[in-house]
Length: 180
Image 1 (cartoon, helix red, strand yellow):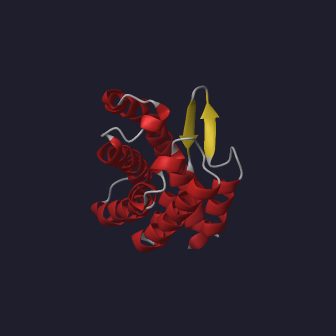
Image 2 (cartoon, rainbow, N blue to C red):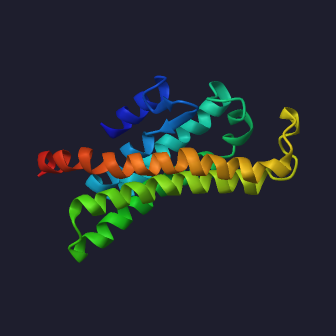
């Protein structure tokens, strides 16, 4: 079921990414994080891998942006962070649940952690691999790459983390009741 949701979110415009003004907020991590809480970090990692593989393949055949053709064809950027979203957010939730922290709070924190992992790793890996004149085709001054990426982290990244912190418990709590 979660794989089907991810396929829909990645193929139908406006479902996996919500445009808010100049931002494009990615909500696919919410699906991965909810699954990792409900099904465990291993299954969350698998679902993150599915999302990453779709992102990787789309970079070749149906890129989401002009830069995706250059950036997301690297599986370390397109796949690895997505796998870690499911792995780490599920691990975070399941390791801390034993400390009697409020379930809603723990789900919110797991949502924020998972979302930030995606944002930080993708942007860090872009910087790591492409800081040395790799975007000459677009005439991008690579000296401006770090401030540009930090700007994305501060706008999209924080917005996505906040939304994940809000929506992960809202979605997960009813699904936990159904699962029981």
